[in-house]
Length: 61
Image (tube, rainbow, N blue to C red; front, side):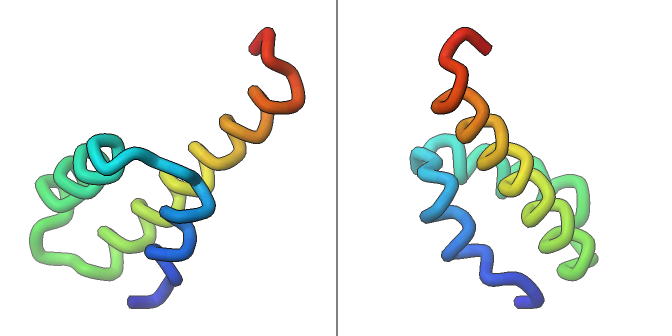
């Protein structure tokens, strides 16, 4: 893997259901391209982490 996805998933504190949904959707979109799969997974996790951080700072979001 290019990215430390497991560590990112832990930091993002995603449920198993959320994690599996994201991975399944990306595998369907990029079944033959591991690099694109990882890149998009990395980007989704980063986005979700930022959203959770924003909500913890400003719960009205």
